[in-house]
Length: 97
Image (cartoon, rainbow, N blue to C red; front, top):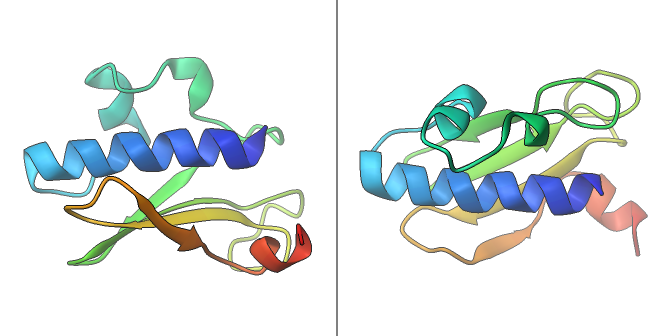
């Protein structure tokens, strides 16, 4: 369920950033009704994090260990201005193969 939820948050983030021209927070997405409040946390009760660069948006869960940028993270990345995600990102993408 977490990869699907991360994908939904990514799609909402890309839509928001295209319209508002800035990186959203999870609360921005709820406020704009792009997400339901129940769609903001991973199975471990942690809020997803949205990171943006000038060209990309990344949505990340810290996973079971509650630490970011470790092998159990769930992440999705997409390019701003493009509604399709680029790829899975993070070590967890390789673990699912």
